[in-house]
Image (cartoon, rainbow, N blue to C red; front, side, top):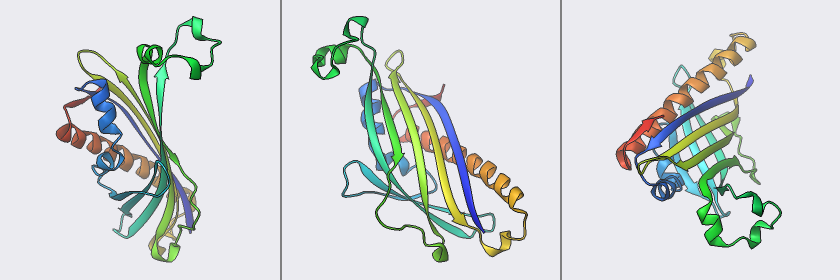
Length: 203
């Protein structure tokens, strides 16, 4: 039986570090994902800002699944300009004005379509799609606020033992379980970042 599952996780954290330090740290894609307990490996591909994530998970009977993601990282400045700049081409606005009115940065992880087929159901290897946004903004007293929101979609084939359970029940259990696991993994990841980088607390 082929299944489609969606998992979500989110959270807000306060980093006890300056904005630019936090951005530099969170931009190290492979380093922070290494703290996710299900992340087996992160590799940079030959394509600019595109990464390969290799996640390894198990079902309730400890049967392994390998999930491969291809992800593009995009960073955008969050700028709030005065009204006088409304009708001005952003490309012509001086760097010092942009810097003065920068209120944060948005880091996006987006699914990147891959040229080759990834799915190999016989060996329980499947393609996943991940979409995440991190809004990073200066907070107060040399602190930085990070708002994290992640969604993962995976198509996979069930091991035979689960095919006797009604499909509607399996789908409901899978989505709920996946979100629970993802939220737990996200919380663990940020706790590990706290030990590796600077103190972090949930907002």
